[in-house]
Image (cartoon, rainbow, N blue to C red):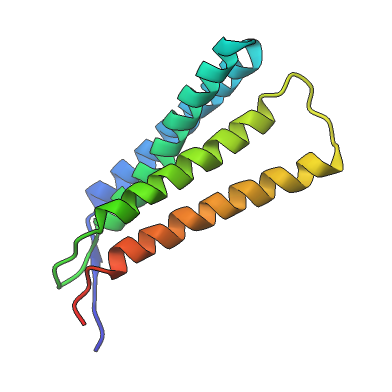
Amino acid sequence: MNLLGSYNYALVALSVFIAMFASYAALDLAGRVTAAGGWARAVWLLGGAGAMGMGIWSMHYIGMLAFILPIPVAYHWPTVLLSLFAAILASAVALGVVSRQKMGLDPCARRKCPDGCGYCKHALHRDGRHAFIRSLPI
């Protein structure tokens, strides 16, 4: 059985707009994290990770909602929220690394950031697929 789907182009455009806005906000907040110190740095880092993670997550889920199938589709909300946490965690790792006062090329940091972000990005995509698949009729 083949399921032919179509796209709601307005939602696709909204997804792209959200991705651009979240990228701009994340770059701006990365500069603020770098300039701040102490507890203010932690607050900016958490705020930046939340904004960037929610932007990434929103862009993905709006893109998924843009795909229209001829069957009813719903999402398992606990799994959807788990993928939001993964996106925020990946964003916190990335912002923490790029907002350091001094960017060195130490081998440990070069391996940890891509690995950590990769694992969290994989969790976002895996959880998104699991939330979607659970609602399909068998």
